[in-house]
Image 1 (cartoon, rainbow, N blue to C red):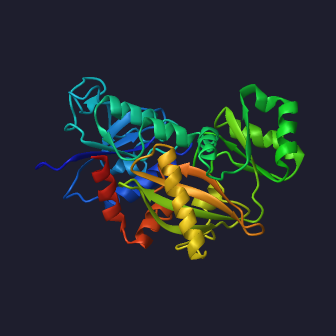
Image 2 (image 1 turned 180 degrees about the vertical axis):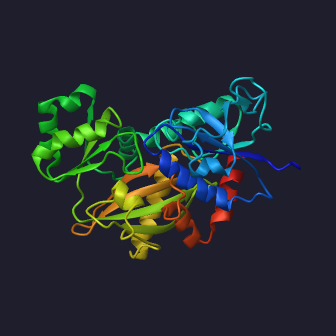
Image 3 (image 1 turned 60 degrees about the horizontal axis):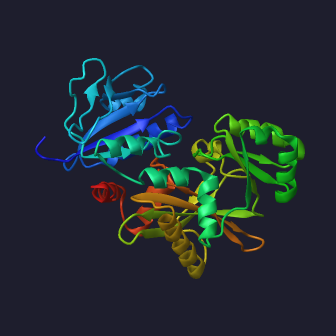
Length: 348
């Protein structure tokens, strides 16, 4: 405990992306330099209770109730994690939190707000940037106003999603096929491709099981999925471009995490001038949404028209063995361990 900065690696959570978060956290934990950082593992169980424990939390321990239940730090004068029942401190004061809690209450600004109140520096975007980027509708309106091309979409919120007239109006404007997504979710959870009007209601219901706000998106014809990693240096820096070739019609949750036939091409086989344009747009989006630390910016490129649109910005990208963010930086000359060191340094 010589003076190494204390880094809380926070994972799990109550969202449908709990299991993906554990895989990301394992990847980060394996590559963090123990000689440089004093790493504290903090798993949030499916009920939302944070727990401190050993590496077993990353491999099923959370679901078995392992780890000590703790309270979040309360204020800058006391940045320790304390036992839930007794209030006794169980960690040194935290210097940096590295949240890798995908989905709601993890990448939407909620967890970032907890650490901001406690005076703990946080890897990645702050409260405002996290909340903006998490909401596909709000983020696209801001980016569109800044002149960045975005996916054409329609928002259906709450009761409007159950209104036949509102659904029909969106269908007529966007045409078929289209995609239906929760407005505030990641990892392709709750996403459906609609090819027939009769499929729309079920697709909206599947999305609303995740979030009451739903976006309907015009499908880009013969879309190629191009992704860029951004590192929040001064100025922000973009990686090389990568391309996802899903095994299936689109990059669904299953294609992303369960299908070995999906391919990641790094660097993407695109022309140099197009690559530079995409990288510049990624940095512009990063700035416009007031982001920090890291983000993965996803674009769709039509094979038939050549049109390019920004699809979404992910402020807590995956760090699994197949995740694009670390792979893109590896290809740009920044290996996984050095990338993690840089992200923590930026937070500090």
